[in-house]
Length: 234
Image (tube, rainbow, N blue to C red; front, side, top):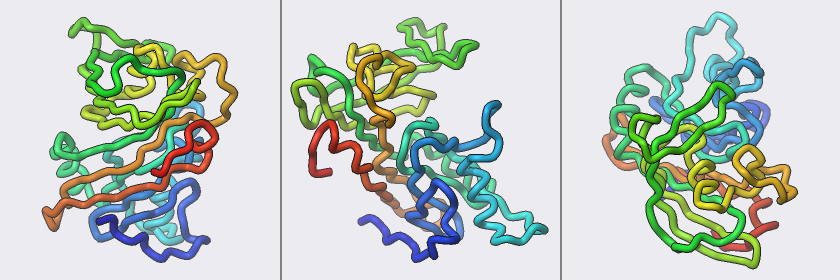
């Protein structure tokens, strides 16, 4: 069962991040598209990590409280994003990451020949921050994307993803490699569809709680703009 979101006044909600679950060990929320998880060369301030550090410090400039990054989402990707409240919790979650179930929804161009399956390849990023896929194990790190087509229209397909690994741009590269780039993903091949939004959403995370050792499921509502392309009861 998904835990109820904490009742946090809107003025205290971190910019670009809706908190869905918070306890002594974790903050789990839904990232808005357009926000970086952590600072990059081209953007130092508008990050979820920075906003959450301010949130846990509660306006106290002398506070040493901070949050710790567990994983990341691409800037244009929306959805569930997890932070730890201590290095110990961060390490526990990273060590247990293979047991964490990560579910995404994406809308892609065209139709996949196989309606379910597993895409595997080795991914490597070049100097221009573009990720390339190869079947050569010496050309990057192994990435595994399990998928299921949920609905098709004349032009688009709604796909549910079970992300078995979490490499940079993984879903985007694998869908492009399959000949069906993610809608709105100009970087990896969608040159025609006019969409200001990337149709990729981190829908849910199910993880082992670091203190209770029980499974915790948190879901982030799918953005309404998904229905412009494929209408579906998420």
